[in-house]
Image (cartoon, rainbow, N blue to C red; front, side, top):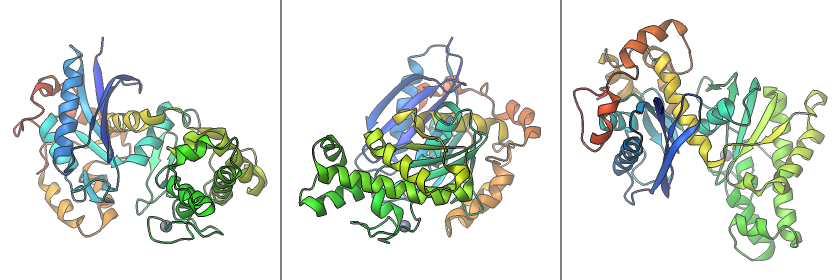
Length: 380
Ligand SMILES: [Zn+2]
């Protein structure tokens, strides 16, 4: 009954979540575990163990591939973390794909977590049915991604959809992740709203507590409303550039709900060019499931687009060293190696026989903590 499943892994600073997801993007089973305190290589080990445990509870199920949504800048071709904030110690430079492929014995894809969320929402959430979706995540930072007909667009340098660094006519209470005070993230992220509230009232509170005061605290209302409106105005300009047919708003801060989304939408529609004044602004549907479903479906999609990565091998050495010097330099070999979103249908039949679900995943789950150097997709 369970059939072929895909594992989605959501790696965060405090917890690792794993879900087994059906071909259609439905979560069959999920679990989470605290992120190992030391971070680093213990993280994929913990993820592999969770996958094995979930799989063991589903007799007859096959885990065909694993998709990971990770914080930080990700070299998708190598499956490596190029850089990451100190939210996760020892994470920058982590060979996530190589490690997890060795542990699980099935193909692994790795992408930035916001991209995984956007992909999940586009395929199986609020963006499903729309053609060109701008996904904006408002949480501890501001992230974004663009999908077209359900496929992620990465751009020439991997920054497509990035919204944090839009210039805004305001000065944030805390710096943007890049250090600037006049970037969107410095004004409209969750911590930025909390810092603005503290500057206004002298009270340092986490955003959910500020949100709980919206009904009877004018300072809370002004703070959240102001940030949401500025976000809407900035996104109006971005919408004119990208011309999406839907905007999906997700992330922790967006869970404030209509008190955040309504001023955002009103400001966006007021500021936007006439054709964009009815642009649907939709709440994300999948919540914390979005990165799990998205990452799992990314791993599924890669099975049909990878040109047999496990039978060749020589090309893995070049890219890995090349990419250490620069984040997105590896998009070049992506096309030859994994062809992430090139969706070359001509490779589908060929890869299906080589990397398809039949190649032994059912024997991998119980051994997830032990390397299987021979049978797993070799990357190193
Ligand atoms: Zn910035």
